[in-house]
Length: 231
Image (cartoon, rainbow, N blue to C red; front, top):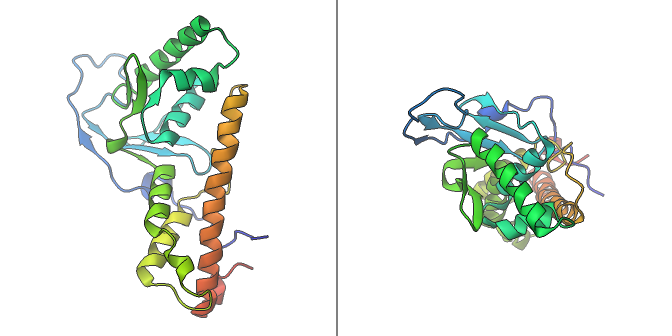
């Protein structure tokens, strides 16, 4: 079994505000500033962290999502990286409710999230999504790096060094994790569909990270950087 001391050292992790690249998009300020949501500002810097304890930061401000159903749906949407149909949300979050009741609950949840994330959450009659081209999600960055790395590290014998640019990408990917758990500590609503999604997603992501760690450890041994090897 792998031990993950190579990358998951938490005590010296920088603040999430410092870890993600800057992302800003100019916006038109709303006419009224009363009860303005943090997302309704002239310049957005939105960062969502799922690889560890889930967090949301907007323009350097930590955002608290108060209700469990609201938190769970927002982080679910962030994890998808794509538009999600309303039917999919109904199936995930309220599989045992009548369609009318489930749709009413979905409208209420989206209304609350829309007030908090006015310029981040987009919804129409069919689909819901976050403004992904203009926000940062650490899970999506990790998956993008995994795709970019591809199978190149495993095409080289384990006792030979990897290309420096490949090592840089692999280290960036594993360093995105702030703990060895996806959505660490989150309490999901009672839904078998949602629990199955979480379990499969967490297993897939952790497996990908452990695979990178193992290969980085082999690379460290190949270049005699024993302090970087798994112990």
